[in-house]
Image (cartoon, rainbow, N blue to C red; front, side, top):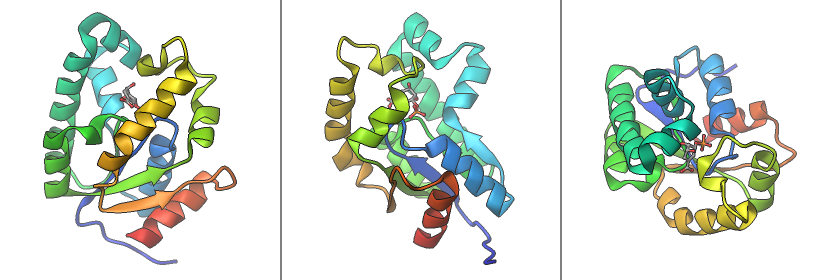
Length: 172
Ligand code: S3P
């Protein structure tokens, strides 16, 4: 098949449930490049889950760690970087990503996102009285910022992880 040489890190952005982690791993494997994940790095460094970090230290603390981790990973190596859903909202993060990477927005409709996140209890931002409504509001508020990504790839329920990885490669 086609072979690619990455010059810049491909940074996957978008909502929780869009498939950033799964598609990122598949992409990294297909390109034989490192897979990097900002949430994972924060979890490793804190030795706590994301939910625990939010609970104990608050969202602002989490966001500060997220910026540090993204900045460091983009400086250290070229690969595929999956970010947390809020990472691309901060102008500072977008600037670092624009400088060192190519931002790819993994899009998905609310129904698909909800189907993927509803049975999980790992997302602190969805621990509300009406998580589906919260997800809708987050989507709506965030879309104009995700739209600043260099590329967008539309996910669908019938697409496999590998289909999505192929779609990203085509978009690149
Ligand atoms: C968040 C998304 C999560 C994680 C944290 C906050 C967000 O990552 O970073 O719970 O603000 O959307 P995923 O997008 O991988 O679920």
